[in-house]
Amino acid sequence: MATNGKVNGNGANGHAALPEWHSTPLAEIPKLWQLHADLNASFRTGIMWPLAKRKQELAAMARMMTENAELWAKAIYADLGKPEFQANLFEIGISHQAVTAIAELDEWTAPLKPDVHERHTEWSPTVYKVPKGVVLIISPWNYPLTLTMQPLVAALAAGNCALLKPSELAPSVSALMAELVPKYFDPGVVRLVNGGVKETTRLLELKWDHIFYTGNGAVGRIIAQAAARHLTPVTLELGGKSPVVIDPTGLDLNIVAKRILHGKLANAGQTCVAPDYILCPEASQKPLMAAMTKTMEEWFHETGGKALRSPHYGRIVNERHFRRVQGLVEKSKGEVVFGEKQTDPERYAMEPIVIKTDGEDDLMKEEIFGPVFPLITIKDVDDAINFIEDRDHPLSLYVFTKNDETKQKFLARTRSGGLVFNDTMEQLAVGLPFGGVGESGMGYTVGRAGYDQFTHLRASVDVPYDHEEAVSLRYPPYTEEKVNLSKLISRPEVPNVHA
Image 1 (cartoon, helix red, strand yellow):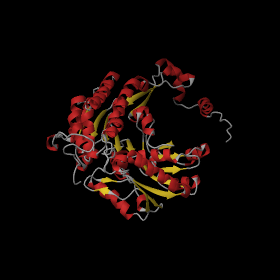
Image 2: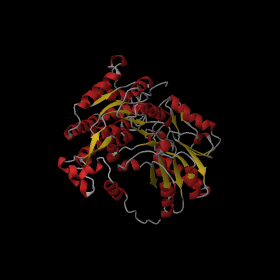
Image 3: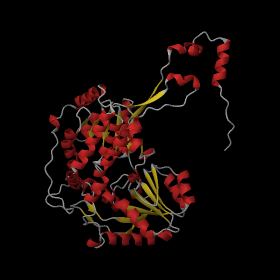
Image 4: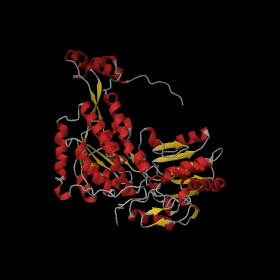
């Protein structure tokens, strides 16, 4: 990486020069195994068993976010050029999840009392929701605050201790985390390590009770292989190519254009659930492109309808990723049908464009993670479904339609992490379970679903000694009478079921 993109002086978003944040030099950080050992020793004391302690740590997280909101916004802008509006709503606003967890924790953690056969009712059958232990959270650079703190909320709510490993590609945010985490969290509960591949590799050599990773599929495979050596469960929040399908009958394409561009332009397209490509019938393509052009002129009228130099638009994180996205555009054999191939190499910024192409284009071989849309022609909804199902399952699927039958087709015949009708990215605002399927990931986060990821369901019974006669059937010798009774018990009447 050529530069961390730090802004000196007042930036386009009006942020003043950043303070110099420094994390502890690696040479002064205790050995990683010692941090691991310290957290394990702390967890074994039962430090996080009381709900009051969990709520205390969750409240500390929310205060860390809100009391330092201006510093977080500046750090996020330094690393990504992300407008303050987006930093507030998409990053700092994650503190709401901690507040929600505090309010819901008593209900989430309540032991379950399952319905059992009457002969077992006096055995106190209970399912306890217990923490897994010490968890490792490895987070990415594109939403460096949200994607570190969101799984941490779930881990703390479930009663775990955690080691955080933020991304080295968001150096300002990671350094600010290193400064603030020790000030707000109990060091026996949450610790943080900065560093790069070397430090992450060393962390993966240790045995954790759960690993939560957000990033790409290539690294996700490395995480899964490392976890398998210790039979450690993992949550992998990956990504992939999330399609947009246009079923145009009755649609207001001006609204469709705004909603698609909102999803693509947020964080300059560097969002795991950003719409990646568009599937649209030929007859609706020119009207859709015209509506997108009109939207750009409305949103960026101060800069002549161009996003490139607008303070309301971000940039690519660093030179390597800028060159990668630029390379995909240059290799494409398609035609630019919206926007222009304009870039600002000094800022790593790119003008949003749509390139009409086919499913074999280089743009379709990997997640773009930038403000570039491939546009692919489909005959109809069934053609779109087949196109999507011929490829890896996406993290999100966006379908613009007014037809209820079409909605049912996508529900029944496609697979994706999430399915959104008539908008993009808004599933993240609702608090629903979030997770991928297949190549887009495994496991869940957000709210109760996130809590469940870090929780072990511990089944328990307490068999009274005065029930010895009732359980004596299991003891040898297995007489004919016992065998006959076992047949009666083990062979239920099967209901007659018809499709």
